[in-house]
Image (cartoon, rainbow, N blue to C red; front, side):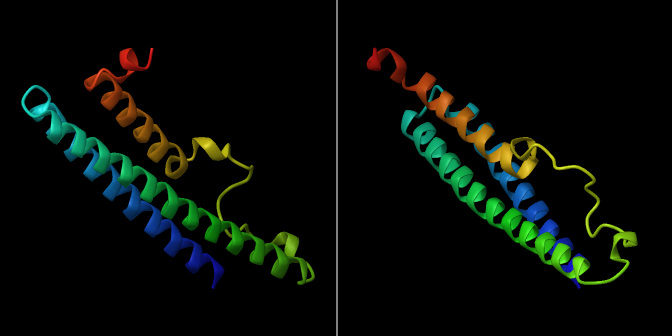
Length: 130
C-alpha cells in the first residue's frame, strides 16, 4: 500500500535526521574541546561534519523524491477510480509546504553553513582572502 511505503520513507528520514543531529552534536562538542589545543583536529572534525552534511542532504533529498513519486502514483490511481475525490488524502498535507523549510532540507544545509563559518573563523580564512 502507498501509505505504508510513505510511512517507511518517513521513518528513514527520521533515522537519518537523528543520525545527523547526533553526529553533529558530537562534532560540535569535540570542536569546543579541541578549539585551543589542536588546529588539525578542529579542521578534520569540520571536514567530517561538512561531508556528513553533504551526504545526508543527498540521501534525505532522495527520500523526499521517493515520497513525491509515491504521492504522484496515488494521484494517478485516485484519478482512475470513480468517486475517489471522497477518499482521505494519503498523507496529511493539505497545502504544499515551503520546500526549503522542511527539516530534512533545511538542517543539513544550515549545519553545513555553520561548519564553513566555524572553519573560516578558526583558520582566519577571511582575512587571507581580502
